[in-house]
Length: 77
Image (cartoon, rainbow, N blue to C red; front, side, top):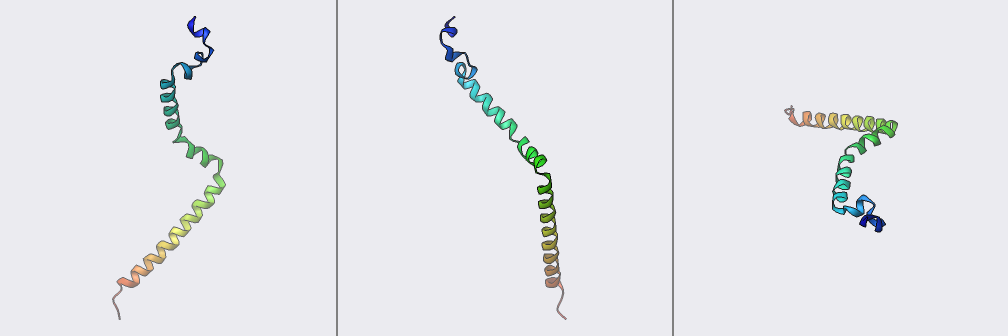
């Protein structure tokens, strides 16, 4: 009945602080990979616009760089 005399020991984190800290760290590390997925699900239209814009920009810049590379490689007349 020693624990009942000390109500602060009734909680798991007060009774086993090191184990509680390890479990909290493990839960945080386990939850981190799911956060981007939750963000993507909530912000689908904005992400679609950003992906389309970045894809278009990458295509445009790739074509400009390919054209410049082609102009450099061509032998002079």
